[in-house]
Length: 437
Image (cartoon, rainbow, N blue to C red):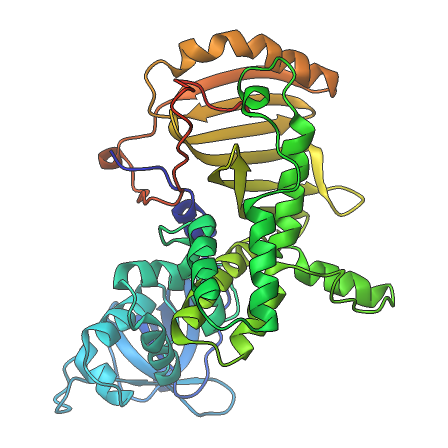
C-alpha cells in the first residue's frame, strides 16, 4: 500500500497558465503553429495560447507546426523556420534543434527540449544547459516535476530554488536529516558552528519540558498548551521564520544580536561557508535545502497566504515529524484569518500509521476530514467527537461535520504518492492508541 504524500500536490498546484504573456528575444527557439498568412511574409503564429504576429523569413503553409528561431529585427518579431539537418526543407527534429543550440544530443537535453515545448516556453542554450546541470544525479522524472513547479509558480530560476524544492519531495524527513548530521558532527572536529548546531539539535530532540505519556494519551484534559508551545518553538528554532525576524530587526533599528536570533538555518549557512569535511557538508546542505524548500512553498498571492513547514516533535523520548499546511486570506494584521482558513496536518503514527487531518474553517464553522487506511477508525473515534465539539465551543468554534476517508487507490488517481513522513514507535505497553490532536 502506497503511503500518503502532500508534496506532489503542492508542486502540482498553479500549473503554468496559457494566458501568461510571451516575451520573445533574439536567439530563442519556439514551437509554433502558423494560423494565418498575410501579404509580405507576415503571419499569425500560435505559441501555446499566445498569438504572435511575425515576419517569416521563408514561405510556409497554414496549420503547420514548426520550430522557429527568433531573429533580430525592428518593429516586429522576425522568425526563421528551423529545418532538419541537411537543410532539405523538412521540419527540424529534436536532434537538429539541439545542434542549432550547440548542445549535445543527450537523453536529458532531448527530454528538456520536449518539456519546454510542451509548456510552450521559449528555449535558449542557457536554459537547457543550466537545467541539465541541475538534473545531474537526480531522478529525471522527479527533477522535471520540480522544474515544472519552479516555472509554474514563477519562482527564481536558480539552482538553490531547484535544489530546495527537490529536497522536500524526497523521502527523508527533517528528523532523520538532523540525526545524521548530528552524528557526523560529534565524530568530527568541532568548530564553533558545529558546537552551536549540536546544541540546537539537542533542544529539538529533548525539549526543556515534556508532557507525560498518560497526559497525551488518556487524560480528559491533555496539555494542549505544551503541544502549541513546542510547535512554535520548533518553527523558530529550525529557522523557518529567520529571514522575517531579521527584516523585522532591521526595520525596528534593533542590533542584529546573534544570540537573540539563534536558529538552525543561519548556523547551517555558517557551517557551509567553512571548510567542513565532505560528508558533513553534504548532510548540512541536504538539511538546509529541506528547510528552504518549505520556505519557498510558503507564498503570498495577493490576499491569499500559504504557510507550510515540517518539524520534529518529541513525545516520551519518541520522535515523529509533523507537517502542516495553512492557507487562507490575510486579515488586517497581515496574518491568516482564523475565521476563514484551511489547515492540513500530516503525521505518521505508530498505530494509525500515515494520517492526514484536513480542517476547513468558514466563519468559525469547522468541517474535518480524516484520511487514514485504518478500517475501524470511525468507530474508534466516536467516543472522542463530543469532547472535540466541547473543546471547540470553548474557543468559539463550531464543529459542523467530521468525515473519515481512506486514501484513493493509486490506480484511481493521478497523484503520485511517495513516502514523506517518518515513523513513530510507541512503547509496547501502549496498545492501539495514539496521542490526541
